[in-house]
Image (tube, rainbow, N blue to C red):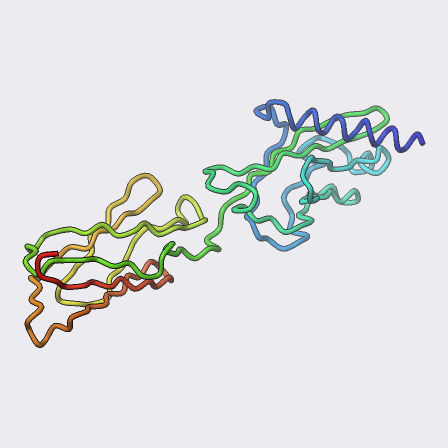
Length: 227
């Protein structure tokens, strides 16, 4: 019964800490998402100035308010290691910074240590378009230089791992112009050569492939008279 009460006190402290301001974390680490279980995050005993012998004698444990136990401490070596799969996009969707806030608890007497682990993004998601086919209605009387905005590709990764460029398959009628704004890249089709539906060399329907990194999407251009 005493053990149950003590554990309840620990969990209450953990919840209160999670609800409080985490700007005062005593130790801050960083680890890449999707690293293997057992990967070392840091030497928690050394960084918190706790002797490894004390970890065992005073029952050091890692607690948090998360549903998964992402980290655990090796009481023999004092190392903080990864205990479960960490998916940054699942934990912090569309956020520029992703941190997991945990606590280290010692008993007899009780000491509570705030620990922040910053999750570093890796390029583990392929960008994609929300639609696989997009139709442009372009008049054959359109002037060269006219621009046609393309839908923006979606990428769950952030920062340097987000979409940076678009590529266009070789063709004589269109080029692609890419511009960046913040962490996103935008693209426009640019008409380079006038369209003539009546010419035999140009089929009624022209299919142009837009390549966004590893993701292909087909954009169909219908050529018409006055649209």
